[in-house]
Amino acid sequence: MIRTKTVAFSKNSTNIFFHILTKCNLKCRHCYINPGQQGKNTLPLAVISAWLEAFAQDSDSKNLIFLGGEPTLHPDLPAAVKYARNLGFGSITIDTNGYLFHDILAKVKPGEVDFFSFSLDGATRDTNDRIRGSGSFDICIAGIRKANSKGFATSLIFTVSSANIHEVDKLPPLLKDMGIDRFFIQIIGLRGRSAKGNPTRSRGRKLQVAKSQWLNAIPRIAGRIAEFGITVTYPKVFLDPAEKFECAGLVADNYFVFPNGRVYRCPLCEDFALHSLIFKNNRLVPAKKLNESDLFQLSIAEGCVMNKLIQPDNLSYDSAGKPQYKLACCLLKEEIRNANDSSKDHRPFNSPGIGCAAIIRASRHPGKRGA
Image (cartoon, rainbow, N blue to C red; front, side):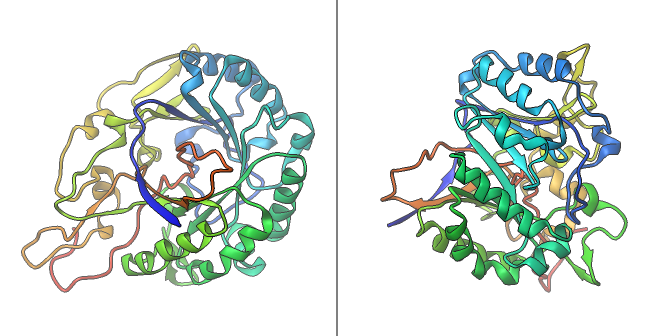
């Protein structure tokens, strides 16, 4: 039996998304990294260690995710993992594009890393490599197989766009064949590289998907994947007008840490100097006002305030000017898994990737549209 549930914001655990550098060997079209706002530097191990210590209190209830850029480009990543494990973090994940630089799999152990989380953006070589770069499909799959062979648990992140949504039906057998434990679906959003220039266009078409495309494809394919015993997580995205909107910035404990010291609570704010916290002299202190924490307090009929501000075209209104739906906080997830499968750890966990850009283009309505 397949069970679907909305994963409530956890008030008993903390997620720390630690970008130890922004450098990457790939140039994915939808990458959310913005070095101009997040830093171009690579953090030295001493700084990584000091910043980890800032989150070390009650660390056994905290999930730590090392990201970049490509975090395995950092030569001291193994040492950072070991230091974090010694500090007692509840779980440690490494997000990677699959290139696995510096022979990382030989320098850490399955007991030190709970998950290696890989990224593909196509179910075929042609589609994936057009989005992520030539050769990346084969290298990522080879990396997954190598990690599995060494006893590591693996997960996969797939960012849905108009350039790859036609391939989602090909995903279930591919994921089963690769031996993936968890599958995270993300949505293309206007952040980082995709927000620059001609923001969401690829060969003359928008990369963002329509509401109808999302609802017709993603829940259905998630159910099929879960039949193989793979836990699937994807953004809830839509709320009915009467449903309660909750902002993770108010009710959850998430930190998005970048090399320039900025620490955000909301991933949609990362292209702007709206961070609510900052590291100064390796101490985590409040940032100057106004910042994202002030936006968290606002309540609007459309749901997410940041979505309304940065990409109002994602919303759709009726002829009276009322929103037809709310957009949920991008950190609110749906989880689908086989209820009969008790062999895996199903601890709630938010990938950054994290479905963090849960922003899509609404189907057009003949009434009033977003301004």
